[in-house]
Image (cartoon, rainbow, N blue to C red; front, side, top):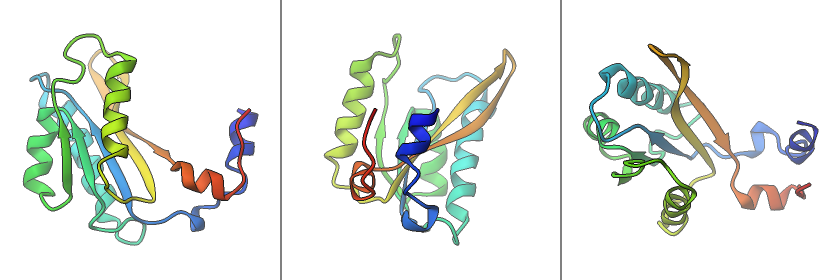
Length: 146
């Protein structure tokens, strides 16, 4: 925990930009509608906060279920979608392939927000967001790894 605090000690929220790339993670299969709609709603709420996020912030979606919801509600923001990811047990190769496509997509953003469902219990999930600073900000602040 101490290493993480040192890495981000020089970066303040004011230094980060407002153009966030939202990577929304859901699935291709049915499951419960609430599971998919919760990450879609969390993404819409975040984009609606105009004082914190540009309203034209790009959205990328893993999974057909949230893709269908967000393509109706945020069609101009949707820039890339992925399906068939995690059809089997997810692997590092799957994650690396998605990361590579994001990096080579040419989409401009200041920070990345990964929106996913956090497991609470067998019948309950809650939407969660992990924010990740891009490599260029870490280099500019002089942060270094362990």
